[in-house]
Image (cartoon, rainbow, N blue to C red; front, side, top):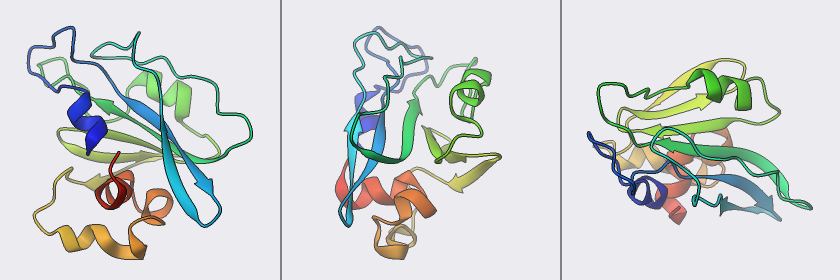
Length: 142
């Protein structure tokens, strides 16, 4: 997953350890990821831009690259404030796996499962909304 690698996960966060994220948009019958700018991101936060005008946003995601003792792998209080109870799912990608945040938080599974066939259900792309950002990114890179 490109966004996870770009976040430079680390036990000892460096200036290059920054959360990465993006909008998942539907265009016609397909889906694309529009990455958020990460210039002002840190190891434990990323500014969330306004939703892109004219796009059909069906989801969003961001990474939690801090692997240190103070890490939060799943939704933080800030994540709940920004994305909990939203009109579309938000995915959190961490070293412990992928979480989907809606009205509740669900653990979807490991970031790199041993059985990649599990990532191909629903054609990979539709799974970005229904099953998890991991499947989408496995099939399309993000």
